Length: 636
Image (cartoon, rainbow, N blue to C red; front, side):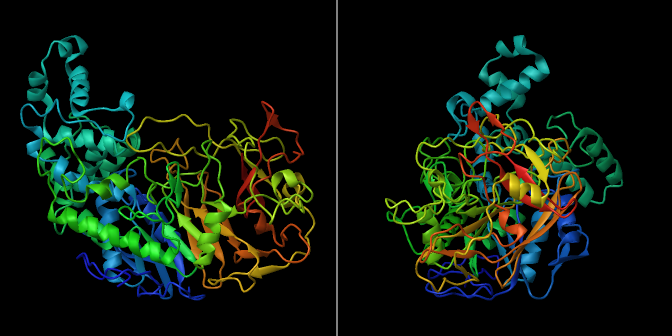
């Protein structure tokens, strides 16, 4: 079946998932279907999940978490919920991974046909616990041979021995540590708890998760000091530290470690999450993956590990990708440990290693690690060939998480430039005879838009509320200036961005089906919904930010919630419209104020404020709509 109906892995014929969870023919996509709510990148933040459920039109919290951590959440009639991955790790005031994952697993079991779980890297990488978090890995003589994360550049790679030396320096100082042998360091610090701390910090981007888990277990255990735990966590920051000196809150370290090792055993909450999840799904005319269909390593769309050819049909590709995932998961279940604890050949030495490798940076493209941003952190439209490939399968929206980008979801329209009539340099519906069709992207060699460090000129400018993309887990942080953000009222924005009068080019509405007119420009709307780095000054890096993406059977998409400073966002995008190529060549019409969202000024367009830096035009991107004060949220 399209949706797993139990916690057991099922391997079957290739399939594509319909809204109801059954199989769907690859040739057609239903124009109807349910209303869809999209939730992604909770990252163990229970308070964020509570805020999401409270504001959601699709969900209700009917009972708080029980002793196991599972809350009772109801999914309202007529709605389908897609969980976009990365449910675990960081947490908020107190660790929340147990409550978040158990609650979502319970929700999936309660509504097997109406809840879909798309898995992220933070979910899948927990498979490594079964082979890497064992006493066999701590045996004498092995400490020097255990490598650091192979996907991290060697200058930034931290091995377990290097990590333990750091602990020794903290406790004894550098002079004494330098005089200690590997065996002496091992005898003092080479414990299963410290191996877990190393795995979380240096290979999973989850520093401090062990102590957050300790506090969460204390809360779930009914500890009388629960209020003290929350108060202390709030006053000291959400990371809570990771050292041995933290209070145990009545939860011994051995119990904390067991929570991690047991969660991936049969019946464990992470094991159940992995068994109920998948890598991709299609509902109506929308494709859901965790990261994206392109990455710095290449094109993930059509690519399946182990299959040498690129699969053009998107439905077939999704089916094969999920089949590969289930096969890898079953291999891990059958072979959870290293076949040889001293192996240096990782591939094939433990079950499911190919899947574990798929979710860490490497040479092959991955939908889990995909990214639809430029190197400078600006939204990047998908190119025309890949957009057409999706359109040919009836796909006109792509919903993703994984990459944080500011204080609210980011919409990227493809083609992605505000039309500028007569500006052939920007490829906007030019009548240039050398071009067979309009091309929406800058020509090769055009300067890439950069993220500015300052705000835009003009009324209502606010601080740099946008956030840079998070560094790849286990890698060194990359300093990327955040996108500058400003707020402009509609009239000013349309004038300043050079929006032309509404032209007469015909359009075709696309509502979950292929356009009836053959000669159309490929179109796509990408919705990036990860807001996990909305407010870096807040303890949990989110602040008050919470947003829900809602998709409707008639093709509309609503984005609503609050940004980090508490202001509301609420706007509705119309159905994705195909641009017809026959007849007079003209820019597509911008019929409503919301049509500007997800578009960027073409490179080379004249700026009303004359702002440029280093001779490079910093074109502005229309990110969202704020109902108060009736203005666009712009970034550059």
